[in-house]
Amino acid sequence: MNLKIDLKRGIESHTRGQLNQALADYSQVIDSAVAEDVELMCLALYYRGAVYQRLGEHQWLTDDMNRIIEFQGEIPAELLAHAHAMRGESYVAQKKLDAAVQDYTMIIESQEGLPTGMVLSAVLCRGETCFAQADYARAAQDLKRVLSSQWLETTGQKNAQELLTECEKRLRGSTG
Image (cartoon, rainbow, N blue to C red; front, side, top):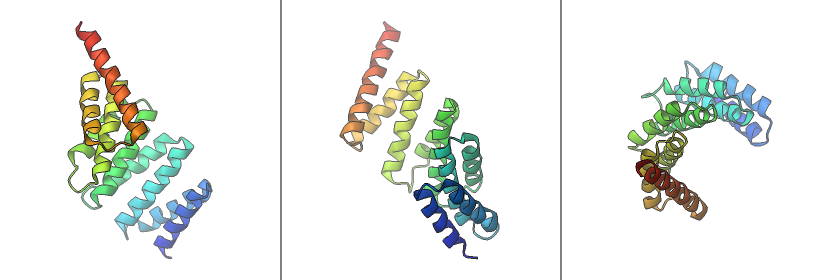
């Protein structure tokens, strides 16, 4: 059995929207690779989590991301950061905002070796989540960092600027 072929087949099924087949293929890799190839197993967990995300199955997604995170130190930093990002998104969808902020902060604080865009995406997501928590000062700080980087495209830049303006307005309102 070639687990890389099974993983590739799962990705192809996933891309075509054949989610049940993708789940089956990813699960096959996960079950077979657990002792053989940790990184391959974690990739399959990540992709299976992406299917669960599409299905709105946030607890299963979170469970898969938790399993990946358990292998911290044994897998590439970028895969670990992707797991934190996806789990953070899932926590936001579940209204577990403190947990989401923790995941985004984990990415930001362990940024060495990660692509700049991945780190800035985590900063932006943390800023948006802090805004949802009414932590306007922290949200404004994160938004300013992202805006100063010139990383966002025009639409994203405009949306981030509008959110920053709203943060500043609410901060002024709370002090005056």
